[in-house]
Image: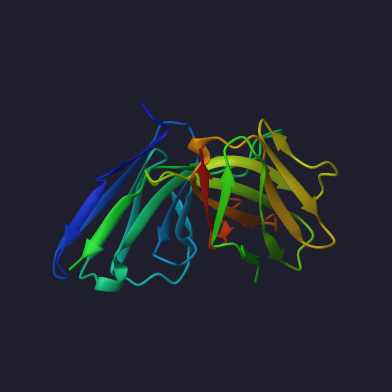
Length: 117
Length: 118
């Protein structure tokens, strides 16, 4: 099992569809994140969950709805998206705060590439 | 608010030579961490190296080293003995260690595409 697994890897949806992105981590971390990577823009943090509670929401539109049922799983529910929401959505996990002597880096999945028609 | 600037959209290097990727940052905080990540075409972000703001020595990890110049607020990545597999997008990122803030809240730069020629 790889550390952080995301499904699906590719998703095409219409603006009226409802879909979900799934992320699973096998690293025993206590924090999980959704980042958005759009063309020609830096990665943007969308949501942070620490110990299964949402601790950060960077003013993301309500058409994106996260869910973290336990420390190993994270979902991003999508509904009535816009074409500008087309992007690579990256899930990550980490130990937060880091353990002593550890840098606390994020471990990322390979991303879910979303295209909204 | 913190900001990361990577001024090189693309860099080219000959195989087995060294290359430096530039990164400057802007923050008024004194306690922070700097990261470099590599993103191959597969999309996964791979952690390369970390430097804490209070670390006195430059970080090194195998062929990667971080040239940390705190007064100039720069954190350049040096890759020695480049390999064809080093061709990828490289991102510089920063986190702040303010109390109560998640350490995973990274601010990223725009990235630099590195191409290694045989």
